[in-house]
Length: 515
Image (tube, rainbow, N blue to C red):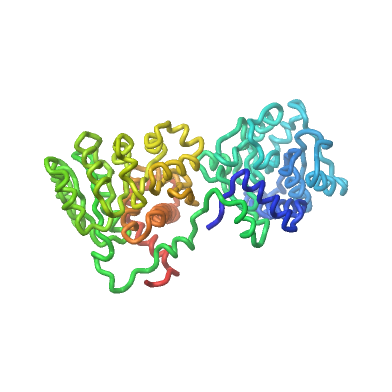
């Protein structure tokens, strides 16, 4: 899985690479030439018969040095103009050497050091704008004429490409620090940064590309550590081996779905069927008596059990017998009976339990909630639900998703799935895994109910961390398959995910070993 490095870690990465014998100038050369190759490919896809006009905006630091290398590479084929934000005399070290290499050929860079010198006409006429103003080191809000420049760049009709990170974006959190370049593409160096893999960060970063700087950097990563790792196909193949030919339904998994209420039976249906579509052999809904008639009229493969409010302990104990895993919460309700039911399950279940939706809201107010959970539990909150679990607000969660997901997993002592674009899976020992997917079609009612059912089915056979991560990937892969088939970015229903899951399994496990 691909590492994700924070601002401090990537700074240390560069230091260690240099200490190990790769000069900083060489790292910059690799970054710039690699970025230029990606930009050439991006330009080739433009519907423009005329050679594009390219503007490159370079800062005085190493990100500007990367931009000078890109300029040197691209000017061989395109009309390129370079603007320096500041004074050429401010350039130091490797960036100054790369500036000299560019200008010693007779190429001239234009100095842009105040608002009056922002080349607004050139920006308006450009086809491609390359942002090399700031890299990962920026930790303060953009201001002055550079902020004004960024505003002008964002207003242009040109294709915008950022080097390493959109200027103005916080590398660790993905939050904008003042005016921030809204890139269509970002070419990042060495490894992805956390801020690129967040909902807000991707709004500014656009499509992501990566340039490797070292053939083998495992020795460096052991010293820097990593903030997270990006889930990949290899992880999926390892987690989901092909099913043995002699498997039978009880071995495949018997999932209990504690969900639904009189006016919210759909959530229970989706979670229960998702468990079956994800490989469980049996799926049973345990629900309130007033929801049973509607569910009875629907059920075919799914079985039904009724909650006896006057005998909750007995109901739960009987329902848990011989089950492989539980998913609890979708459409369950928030009244006192629901609270008592959640308390009974979390304090007595000795099997994997996935808590979602209403169960999470109830969990947040249970006095003994944290003490009851252990490493068999998986919480699947969106940012609002996580805010309740951590006694904060949604804005705080979104301001630093990685930190809050990690904190929640540690405080609650279980695996936490923070849903959203680039869903995060955090474990109590501090590990964070990141979904590589962002897909707007998943913003649909019932999508989360399906995810909880998928994860529950997988938790019957996998450790909580692997079940959660593989479930997130299956869910996202199914949406990708649907999008590719329909050529649409909206209109998917939660049941479409269900219907696509078998095909998703085929795609994931095609090369997997049979158990």
